[in-house]
Length: 219
Image 1 (cartoon, rainbow, N blue to C red):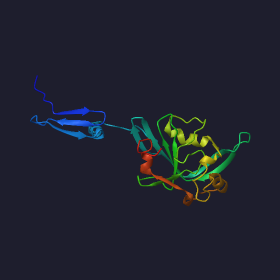
Image 2 (tube, rainbow, N blue to C red; image 1 turned 180 degrees about the vertical axis):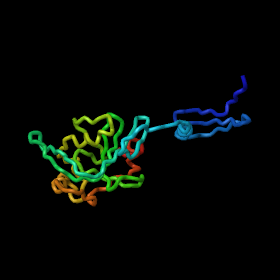
Image 3 (cartoon, rainbow, N blue to C red; image 1 turned 90 degrees about the horizontal axis):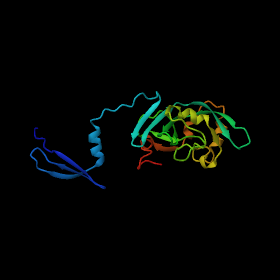
Image 4 (cartoon, rainbow, N blue to C red; image 1 turned 45 degrees about the horizontal axis):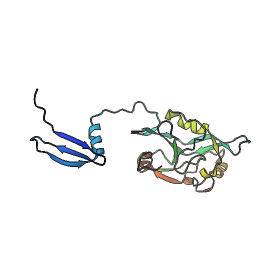
């Protein structure tokens, strides 16, 4: 068999990766390299496809833990149901809503929802607090006992199908007019036709939302 000389070797240690480059003449040079750079170099030879995406998909992030998919829902009027007590029937609202971005993590994790003044087109674009109960300050949905589907395309429908609860720990910080209770804004907008975009409270940039679920991303 023809001679097959060693050209490159990688040593993976607990805290470092060392590259040994033997060159064309067998002269070795050694240097530290980034494991991420190694992964990118190897991945450049792969052909990747997302498959068919929902028509309202904004972005997709593939991680070792699974796929994160962001969906856009255009502004419109929606029916929401608010539970104020265990005994009383829910109150129904017909609310004009801003555009919404639903961020769907891998199955089994609670989705996130944010508001937007326009459909996001750049990482620098601003996302705002979604004007709802049952959404924590981070944007993550408090799912309670309501089952959310594994299919990300069905998450927005499941969100509006659930009962909202007048929980004060998810009521504040989502309206400029009514910073202490988003329910007061619901009362004001019920049966209205248009959401006041100047009432939205800025939260994070699209680029920050893309990093959610990573070590450097927000919780």
